[in-house]
Image 1 (spheres, rainbow, N blue to C red):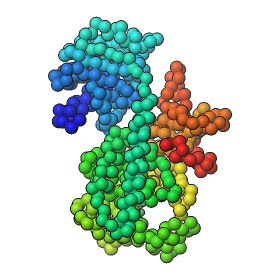
Image 2: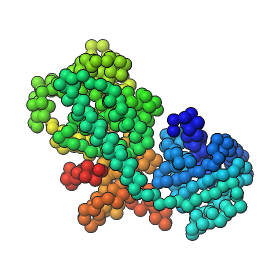
Image 3: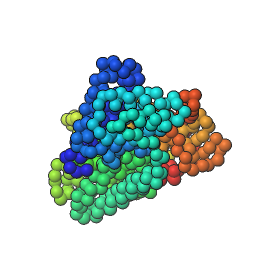
Image 4: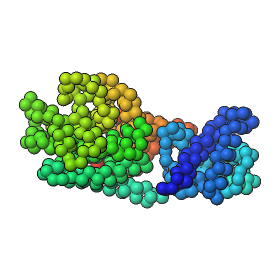
Length: 467
Ligand SMILES: [Fe+2]
Ligand SMILES: [Fe+2]
């Protein structure tokens, strides 16, 4: 997908999805000859015909939750989110899996398609009805929705898992090297972070899901990687470029590098810190800036990472540490990393706080801090990213099943995908993931979240389920 032409096609494929939903949605409310419908159809025809002049055939296919155009996966973009989601649901209702444009089309073809599309869900076998009524249109062919091959999603899961653990072991290696005073090449770190950036652009939910895995013994390394992933995901929502996201991910990965100077007997102390010990802990941002500036090559990225490491506990309202004589505005990256850092720290079991907070509790604390310790504008993007029920939240469903949030739903924040772990008879079960947007024949939701629960009370090991 490197060529410019491919890029153009990917961009027009997003336009195609968007315009197709615009047409279908407009046709739901207006009659076919309404000006809004006619002009939306014209625009769609022109997008399709332009695409057809570049490719001989245009296959728009729904696989799982994603659309593919001639086998290229179309990225979910924020601006088109609503229309994307609408189309996915409407295709599924009709068992419609693909639409193939083979010849130049005219507005009349689309009008027929829209009419059939609108009528078909009410028939008993929607796809057959659809196909029958479309036989007259030679330029458009349709295909039935295929069952998603579970294997495919399994492979993606495996790949994401590999990326995550690679990053953890790389971080471990690099921190130990810096500790030992060895030279470190940040080029390798860049590759590690780039892989995470790419996967967040493609499989955000899966990689975000990995951050719900907390390892008590290897806290520092997991924490660094988690903060990096959460920062990249937040940065993506803020519209940062791939290059900026890589820089941000790097800065986030090294934000706590100064902690290596804290004597292990202090850092790993199981009881509360004394005032003197807190003084030492609070030095880590200063030690961080020093450690990073000591690295061989002082490029822009290293300097920016040093700034983030220095500022990550300062807080938006500068009530944190270190204290400054002359107030300044925090670096944009520092503001992002603060969210990721606080959220991950609260939800992790650490030496001095053995009991991690449930993600929903952590989120409510973050909400309280928005506007004071944390940037209120970024908060809106943050909550949109983790969802009202973040991945890993333990929830009780209306069916009395107990589950953990597995994947959040961008459109219906209160209806994520949930993995059932204890059924309504109290038996431990493993695996089945349910979608809370599912409705029964009467149009009512089959399952809803009734409350969230504290995972510590139930002695539930999230990693066991999420891996
Ligand atoms: Fe820190
Ligand atoms: Fe941290």
